[in-house]
Image 1 (tube, protein in one colour):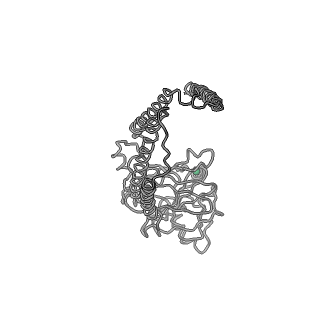
Image 2 (tube, rainbow, N blue to C red):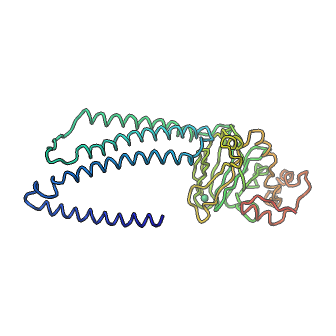
Amino acid sequence: MTLLIAILSILFIVLTFMVVSKTQAILKGLTKSEVEESEYLGAPDKFNSANGVGLFAFWIISIVGIIWSFIVYKKDFLPEASSVHGKETDYWFWVSMIVIMIGFFIVNTFLFLFSYLYRHNKNRKVTFYTHNNNLEIIWTTVPAIVMAGLVFSGLRVWTKITSEAPANAEQIDIMGKQFGWTVRYAGVDDNQFGKYNYKLMDDAGGNPMGVDFSDPNSFDDFSNASEMHIPKGKPVLLKIRARDVLHSVFIPHMRVKMDAVPGMPTKFWFVADKSTADMRAELGKPEFNYEIACTEICGRSHFGMKLLLVVDEPADYEKWKKSQKPLLTENPDLLNKVPDNLKAKAQKYVASDEPAVEVVPEVVASRVLGNSSKVLK
Ligand SMILES: [Cu+2]
């Protein structure tokens, strides 16, 4: 690779030098009184032919290269979208791509063909042709109509994607921080999120998302820093926030992308229509997993900022939700943050029917580090 770059660099320098010296020679030629007879203008028709043929050959090689690279690298494209809106955006992406490519090929074919057909010939006089109204009307209106069609159809899809989420959407609170994602669910008892406040964010205290425990809706909220589950075929609304710097939620297979901005909550709703199991079968890859990546350069470990995404069948999803432990159960010390008048209500989540587990400091540390592995005594 280094050798190739070196050869190309030398070639570039040599060609630049040749262009400069030729230009100087032509300029010198122009100062002569008998321009028509000059050695540089008109005389070397064979050079003009070589240039014309070379330009057209360049275009043919380019077309072959474009088609070849498309065929060879098609296997690296993302598979068909796993979300309802994703199929629609993909459709319009390809419609735009085809329209643009048709225009690109027509314009460039004429450009290179004309530079060959109408190369200089001393026996041919240039026609002075100022304009042609009909031609201008055609090449203005046709692209205008096509472009307007693309813009309006895109706008229609975009309005739908960014519309309010359906009322039955499964809501998930997702927070980006250097360097990981943490998700919170509203809990199976009330299905309501408790409030949060950035002032309450406390990694050491087991509350990295700043959940407000003076709000009883928080009591059954549960959180996960190692994976996010969503149900297949149901609308999911991501409530997106960032704790420190700009991040961006990116689920490539779902065609989901939305910035996470500190101090400015954003959202994105979508319907996943292929479960993790469906995708494994479709791709023939039993180890396939969806992932949520960060697509905003957010610091040194940006590249590692990802979260496992599991798309479950709705029944499995409900089962998974029930198996998750509320924040209060995971970290009983959080009971101290509950106001006295609500302690009785919160107690239910702390003293569960299971035998009391003693939480060792490593549990808190592992949660803060975004690692779900629990170290229990
Ligand atoms: Cu990030």
